[in-house]
Image 1 (spheres, rainbow, N blue to C red):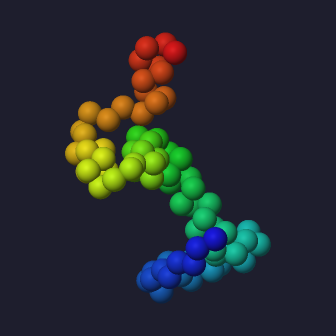
Image 2: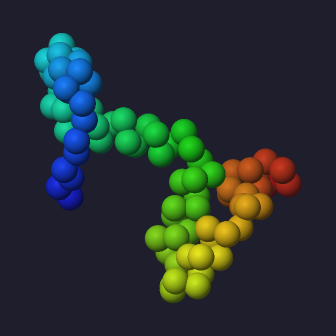
Image 3: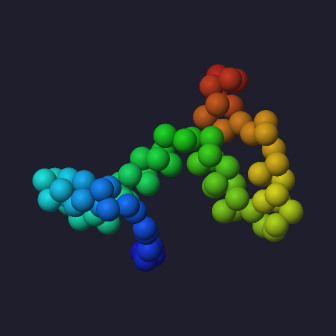
Length: 82
């Protein structure tokens, strides 16, 4: 696990603290779940992030980021009925 420092406004913190108490979950757990859901719903960005993590060098990363015509594996499979 990695430690992350986060700054949020007072009103949001109080809401999160109340929800945390009601759901009997830690705020950290709620943030982990929220980030996982955010990444899961953005499949195109998730695919690009995975490519970046597997890239060999900076040139390859810049190429991935510059490519506006990126197609996720799921979109490709659906398009070609694979």
